[in-house]
Length: 321
Ligand code: ADP
Image (cartoon, rainbow, N blue to C red; front, side, top):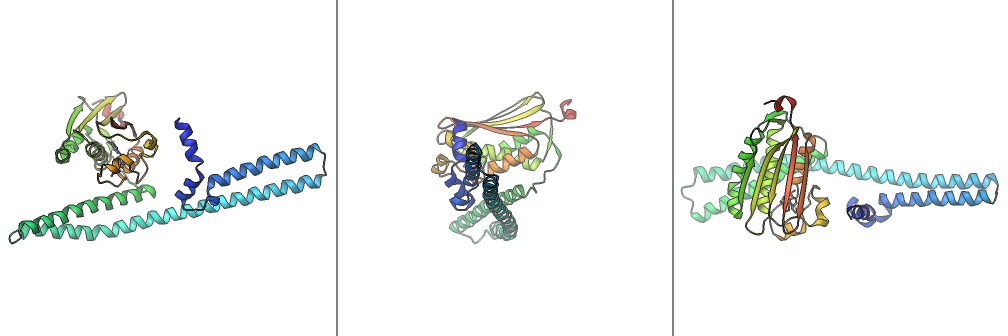
């Protein structure tokens, strides 16, 4: 079933052309199909010509024509690919520069608004205070988006540098859960944490792994349409540690599950829930874990819930702890 869907997607020429921003006639799949058709037809023509024992000249001309057509189609494919790759590179550079430039004015706004609240609170009435608090939270949201866009540009340019430090994953999970207590309260969700004894430390980028865990836990809280129940587990399995976040939320529709780790992807049911989101968190999380040498996977059933997990290899040295 999944294979059929994947094949249908692969040969959905119209969708491919739309995704690449080229006309249907320039879609790579169509070019490959045409190349296949030309190759097969030329073989059949050659077969009939040979069978009828035609002249060598006719054979050479037919062969030369076939090669020329395949060559022309091939060069169009390559040219299209070059254009798309170049546009993609320019887009990543643009996003990276724009996000960098946005960072400074955003911190200035945040600094000014916080200063107003801290130092000049006297003289502000309740309404004015509320408005400034709204500025602070909208600014925080924008800063988070800019940070995510910068990370996406780093990933796309192959520049996501990860630190190599010792991480006590059990402590980190507890820290992140504690930081999400307010969000859980806001959404009326309960969080249960189960951590095995003796979790060996791992090696990775602590700040970025914390962002991954934070993303999984905040998603589990956000995507619940009833009394949310989130379970965070951390256990040791042979030569790895596995961290999972399970929820009883809206789940992900089966036909959209293949896209879950794509950037900017948001499932239809999540959008309907009117939760805020950018569809960048899981893309960044998956790339961070993959690049750290770990694995990330998920299972989800619509209207039942989701389970997102990642694993990390244990250092031999750390395993003896
Ligand atoms: P965001 O949450 O900002 O939209 P993410 O990349 O974290 O971005 O998630 C992408 C999409 O995956 C979400 O918009 C949602 O459709 C789906 N998703 C992620 N986690 C869950 C979950 N725990 N339950 C249901 N859907 C989820």
